[in-house]
Length: 592
Image (tube, rainbow, N blue to C red; front, side, top):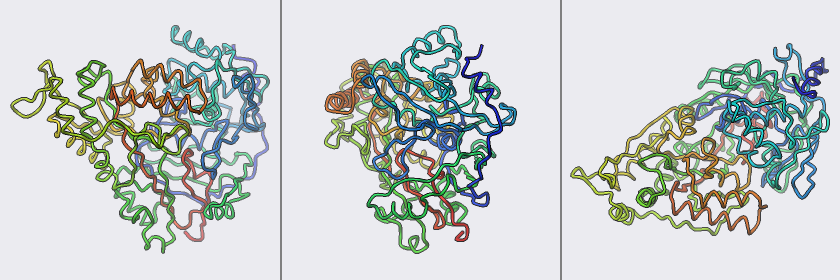
């Protein structure tokens, strides 16, 4: 039997008055992805590129102010920020009325109003064992009764979506009260993260595959719907004529750039652009030629291309003269290399395995990778939490330093002897070969060359494994990769989002190296109970030291994100958390 509120939702499939379409169908934004998407089910996808599409189609309860720095949470489908009571354990959230899903055959071709029951259903999907969502960590251990429901589902192999969960109390169609087991000081930010977007149960049940995923038929309440999709090649998003009357309304501070954006955009309806046409271009030169040939309006200028447009971090004069715009930030990210802690060659907590990983970490020259792969377009990191994120420690200094001589001495001491061919063997006499995986593009090839040099300096054989990005993510989640450079861009601007990357229970989710280090896991679990402050920061520093001792990873760098926009693009400014800025911009057709 369907829950009463869900049945009510079905009855409210009705003829809502259609708002006037704000977006101009003749305004087409041509954009580029540097890697392929994986699909469009918010509960499943975990890559940046799919996430950008999902945020355009689906909506979370909260989002971020487009201009505010540091990032500031604001309501999206919620009426206001949550009412927090009971010492931070109870959140009461009210939904705006009249928001509707895009018309779909799942609703009889009509629109259907969004309700809080849709959000509860979407949260439940993250714990469905058939889905095996990589995002269950967002709610794990937090909501009253949720973990228990997940445990029953794991035992039976089926999640009971009709069973009430005490921690998700639906007061009425538009009001949800969330009861937490302990205070969660990041919950508002979690509810602004796209895996918590609202999906409709009717849509999922109509289009899901054998694993319960609905990757190919996204239907949301957002400003765009999927128009065309050629997997790994082209994605077209069309503005939804039914999208509600949402106004561009953000304040500028003292920054003249922000003031100009406000002057150009204030009061306009969101969105202004009628179509987003995204092409997947893996090669740097293809993206560059498309931009200079004015075939692309927005392009990400990764390190290998930076010298073509930048000089000392600023736009070259010839592009300034053309009116090309540069929006440049240091991404709130950590790019790190991991070694699979479940791999029999490189993993484990025995002394010789730790010594092997630490030696490799010491042989790695972060500055060399930044220079050769990214053309200097990155900053080295000492700490697992990058600048601009709550919990970052600017005074922290890692104990891991580039020292190939000491690295080789460490391998000698722990029995990794060199054979007649000059390559090392394992202490038990078996061959030692490290497989390094990277994206099958120009950057990936450069990274593989850098790491071949690292392993050569130690006398260790390395085999490279260049893979399509979606395939690499899938293998990584199953703990099948031995080692790779893994970038992580902030889902929300708090240190918890980075320290969870190395938490044992997050294996098969975001813990790419599949590490389970008891000393680390205990401290991370304790840190989740604390707000930002000295006590939590102390735990974070201890956790960083543990990572250095056991070496499941080597902290690397945070890259600059250089976004180039053509002169006719209005209002673009790179946001540190939001990735779908095209919702907030306009195009001047007459200039194009």
